[in-house]
Image (cartoon, rainbow, N blue to C red; front, side, top):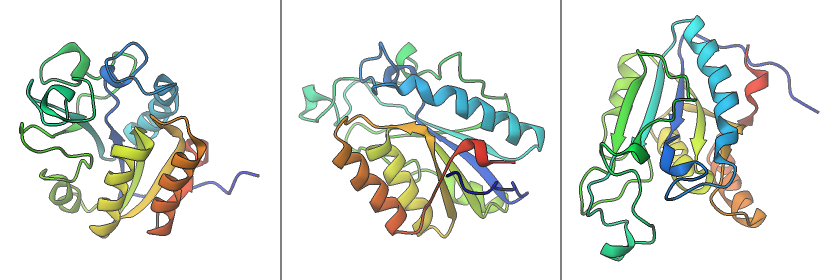
Length: 196
């Protein structure tokens, strides 16, 4: 049974985590069914845009020799290299021109799963008077998980929109662990259809 509706408030913001072409089907580090997050995110964008409320979109913006790449001993194939087509937001994601873009993991020697790590995101949100974050994007057990944990540690209330996230792992135990890690720290699990 779906919970009651969630009324949006002026102190809310939407945080879209790493919905980039390389993480979508056909990309170099594709998240299975990653494209399924786009429709619910676009609906949330519409709601936030109607109210002129803050919308943030994070992106991996890696140098070609980034430490997370296998050639440098990391776990991943090269992906989201700055200025490449794979690092771009897909055209199907209807980001308004006023979207605040947060670039992360831009230094060769340092990775950042969280979009709060070594960025100005916390300060930007607080300057806008944001108290509650609605989080969507890719991937559940990596960048979404770490961004949610950092948001909670920074003092924000966080709602994770389960229909607008997808995991790299197809192991249900991995996904449950990520969910429990978020909920255990205070995040609330919700669905985009509850937003009003």
